[in-house]
Every structure is written in C-alpha cells, then in structure tokens.
Length: 157
Image (cartoon, rainbow, N blue to C red; front, side, top):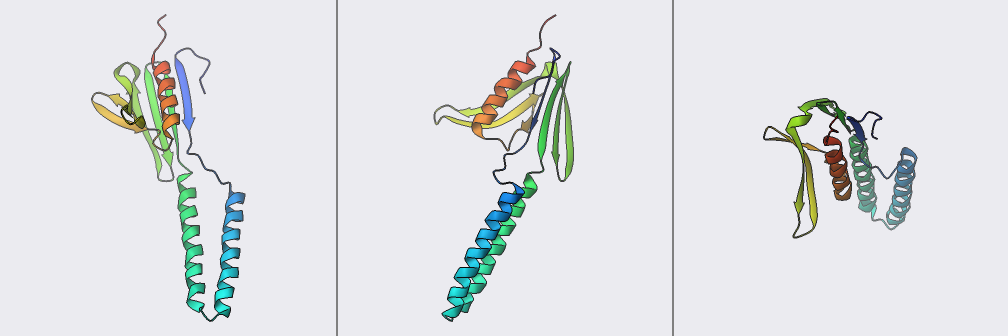
C-alpha cells in the first residue's frame, strides 16, 4: 500500500496459504476417516500391515501440513522513506533488517526472455544483491518489481 507522502512507499508481503486452520482440520479429518475405513477393511481381510502403512500416511500428511503452516508465519516489509530504504524480513527465527540508501540501489528482476520465465527479484546496492519476495509467484514478483521501480523514482521538487 502506498503512503500519502510523495517520497514514501510501503508494502508488506505475506506468502499465500490456501487453507485456513478450519480447512486444515477438515482435510486432515477426511484423510484420517478415509484411511481408517480402508484400514478396517484390510484388517478384516487379515492384511493388517496395510493398516499400519495407512497410519504412517496420516502422519506424513500431518507433518507436511505442519511444515507448510510454519512457513506461513513469515513476512517481508519494504519501506521507502526519504533517502532510506528498509527491508524487514520476519519469520519464526526472528527479524532481519537491511537498510539501503535510495540513491544507490536498483531493483533487478531476473528474466529468461527465450523461455519467457521470471526469476528472482533483488535489491542491488554497491555490487551486493539482496533477494526479496522469494515466496511470491512469478507474476507477483514482476508486478512488485514495477511498483518498486516506480517508487524508487523520487519526484524532483
């Protein structure tokens, strides 16, 4: 979201998550129920090892969703204020803050024109690259790059 000041800009990025906590419970409930029904069927046929493997299946699905949910706690905030640019990356491990001088940075988006692919997005300053928006899709990174390029151009007063 752009701020009211002419030379300031701020955007906060979050990774997309398609399931809410309720949706996660519904999916896990469906997996558990279906595996339990299938497991009981195989148990009745005296193929009891299948029941154990279906239990392992439920555990693996739960672990996969738990790891996916953990990464949902991250966010990235990019702030342009006057001559300063702040990038704040937050995750469960803590915060990483980077400060840049607006006059010395450029926004760089990797592109493969031949295969029509959009790559990583960087803030480049003094020959060093800092990757931003790594959790966004290609189209979202391209749109963000345009917004950041527009915000980088400071009005001359």
